[in-house]
Length: 148
Length: 148
DNA sequence: TTTTCTGCAAACGGTTTGCATCGCT
DNA sequence: AGCGATGCAAACCGTTTGCAGAAAA
Image (cartoon, rainbow over all chains, first blue to last red; front, side, top):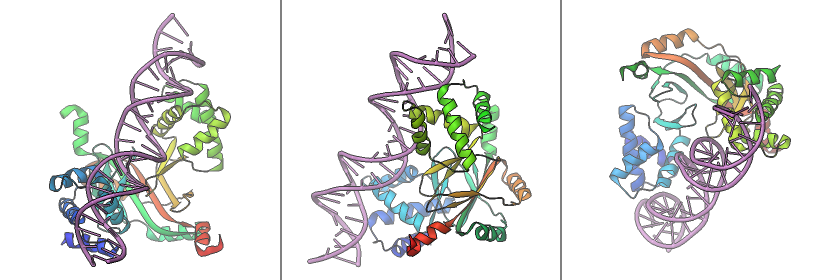
């Protein structure tokens, strides 16, 4: 169960099992199930429905932990905004729509051997990668063409 | 000459050839020559040396135009900060240090054919890609080991 | 009981905007 | 002369921080 995995992630980071974090875990589980990505604010709105007194700061603090733990993945858009989604693997490879921000996780075979050799050449230790294809989804194309 | 290319980019966007923009073009040319990346604030500090009255807003407005024109490339870091550098090609492929933010443009042979087929499958029109390897540069590793 | 987390509200920092003025064309 | 660009300052917005009280361990 996803909720358990999230609680484990908190515990892993040495965090207590508190009510706000349980709520956050629930909300994230819903999002993981639907595959939706979300902004911090989306999540906060959802949380307020369960507990109107839950503070923004708490949410920020928890999200930070989960990103560190590799449980959440942060997607940065060219316009400076960013959203999150529940991670599947370690590396991040997606296809996102530059208009509506919807996205799909994709499976690309990247030439990993090249990366190690690039690292060696440049004298860097490679610790992660991010690969994003930007495009426009079918929906947004339709709307652009006036069928909205 | 780079300065000319920048001016052309402004003109392309229908912008007038004004003193602040000439200054910006000069500063960018220096940065292009040295291959350094920079934050908006770096650039602003440099500009103030030439003209202490140049406003931040003007800089933001100009940078925005150049990013749109594809002349500047924006690099987003995991900590939410971002920097710019003068573009070479259309697509962005670099290796950046998660600690000091230095970076190198790298030449990776990405499986382009895969991308088109991914686009087709997902019904997206692909318009760009971003590929970043994150790591730690030699300098930062040394410092971490106490040789600072 | 001790330590950590929480909620609140205030501070923060980067970015954007409104507006009177300036300066290209 | 006309219109867009500029500089300034204030507004903005997402995020972080300080702190007193509340909850876990």
